[in-house]
Image 1 (cartoon, rainbow, N blue to C red):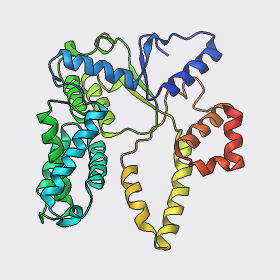
Image 2 (image 1 turned 90 degrees about the vertical axis):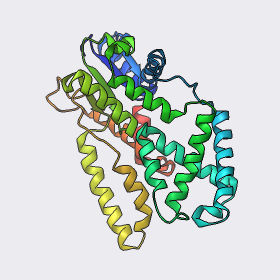
Image 3 (image 1 turned 135 degrees about the vertical axis):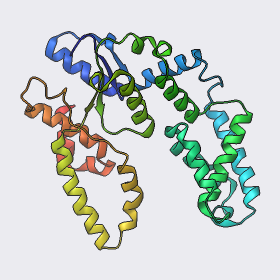
Image 4 (image 1 turned 180 degrees about the horizontal axis):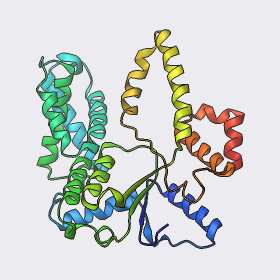
Length: 302
């Protein structure tokens, strides 16, 4: 690892695991050049406020719940019992809106285009247009309250990274080496745009992405997954995979150049077993941990 590099971990757990392995291997590790994605995002939020790109205060959890509830009540009156969402109660509409807000928040400013598309759909009582009306009510109330939700904050961060580097956080502004994102399993739309903006400003060579999943695991699981999907489709249960497959298209799995440096591209059995546990934790259900093979693998490596 180059001392000038800045390593970004998706989670605090991934950072601690990396530190533990480095200490066991080298007896010492400098953590001053290691941050989590959450911490880096907080730095960018502070810089965006200082640059005047984000003026409204962040929406608290309580105010968010109240805003969603009030917007749902307004939308219910407007629907007046018509359409797909008209028969839902205010509480059910609030739950639907909560999910919609959470789904669109990673898109930043692009969520506005999605909202416009939803509102343009016909007929007026259709589900898509009613979802657009529901979301528009929420955005209107948010603007009236002069508050910023996750979508607004994400948009401000992306504008910050697309602008002059003088406004960037000190850690990024003074970066001399590479920016390495480690332990990546998948990227949501905001994280993808976040990294893309950094690549555009710093260059592809200085922004690196390291996956937590070796290519061999992806190849093995894709065969198993394809076999299961074909079986379910033939049994008439294909609809159950629709939403899951749509989420899967957002996933991004890459080879890890960092893990393979200095080993001729081959992992030891112990390292491979550890990666298997990472995959198990990422993909297994609670019932899977009752299986002896899975439980034994976890007990041996953690």
